[in-house]
Amino acid sequence: MRGRTLSARVALAVFAATTVTLAAQPVTASPPTATTVARPIAGSVAALAAPDISVSNVQAHLTQFNAIATSNGGNRRAGSAGYTASLTYVKTRLQSAGYTVSEQYCSSCTYPSNNLIAEWPGGPADQVVMFGAHLDGVSAGPGINDNATGSSTLLENALVLAVQNPTMTKRVRFAWWTDEEQGLNGSRFYVNSLTSTQRGYIKGYYNFDMVGSVNGGYFINRVTSTTAVPLKAYWDSLGLQPEENVEGQGRSDDYYFQQAGIPTSGYAAGASARKTSAQAAKWGGTANSAYDPCYHRSCDTTANVSATVLNRAADGVAYALWQLAVSGGTPSCTGGQVVGNGGFENGSTPWTASSGVITNSSSKPARTGSYKAWLNGYGSTRTETLSQSVTVPAGCASYTLSFWTRIDTAETTTSTAYDKLTVRMGSTTLATYSNLNASSSYVQRTLNVAAYAGQTVTLTFTGTEDSSLQTSFVIDDVTLQAS
Image 1 (cartoon, rainbow, N blue to C red):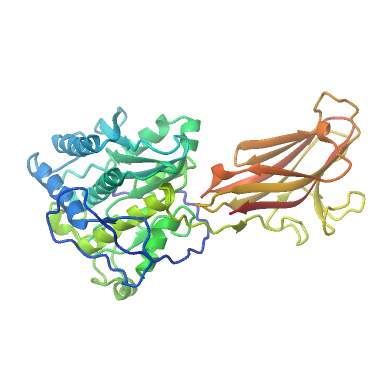
Image 2: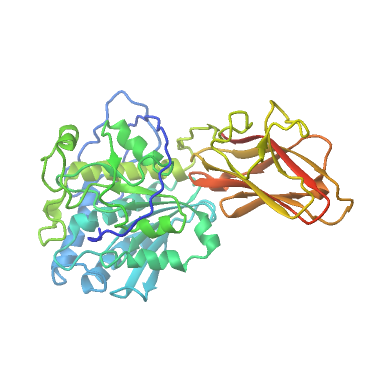
């Protein structure tokens, strides 16, 4: 994890996660080299599809990274021989497992070197779930907790996915970043290289940085967001009571994804910050001591890793991956209607509207109740808006935005749209209606908004009217139903 804090912009969407119970289903993707730590889950639980990730296999990768550092000047800093050997190790394992693997040269990095991107060939290419970790370390030591633990956790999860080869509902992409320790440069270069369309394909980015700290805690990036739901559900099933990753905000590779508008989350176990007494009481360990006493030091070796913390992170990644992208998983869909006050009967909250738009004027009747939103109708140049921030839950099968419109107009044309009502989610236009859609009664409009699953976005209705001949856009009974 990068040592100096960036000024992060972190959006939190409140979500109440449902507790999920799990049972182990052992899978071996590479030869065991140590005693496996048992998953701490009660015996009388329901079995789900997510596999158990062998912590001994993850530890075997850590041993390889430690040996690579020892053979290359004691570190795996970006641009060094140790980093190149680390990338070759991961790339070789992934290619042998059947991944489509590419290297991306980061020319703007402090130490120019390569990101490694691996994609499993299954699932729709425009529905991507991405898992990332930085592969580089600092020059002071081998960088095993920071961040061979994240790199190894993802590598073993990728190998298990290849062994099981399930039917995919989304495309899974793994990334190992360079030059994180110098300012998150590898991940920033990658995000900046994407077109807006490619960014839109990524439905969630999950980051894993320092997931085996010896005095560790259980932290989740944006813990209350819908993106975090599967990660939190797994740790909730173990009774871990995870907390927000405050220490890591703006300091790892999720930062530039978040800045680009891509939903993010991830696991962390803590760096140089100190464990509180309350945290020690619920998680064990030593209060008032650093989560990782060897953070950015030469003692960050394989001895500087908690097998228990590492095991819980690795299994949580598998659970999230299966829920998000594998057919037969059980996505954590909360369902329900997410638009507030869609009938406008309870004042203006949580809508933001131009003056007079939300009204009970009898000259334009509501479809139901007394209130509705009435945009334009002045017969002069005017723009009015109606908007609300909505949090769209992840993991549902369908997402339908529905609203009723009554459009009446004094325009006489049958071919020219002089006055318009535009419906947007975020900056994307979903539909446009005009004076050409005039009707004597309310008409229901339905739009598919599945592309916004797991995101908090602003739903906006914008009415524009030209200089003459009024058109009124009346809206009522707005819903966004996820199921």
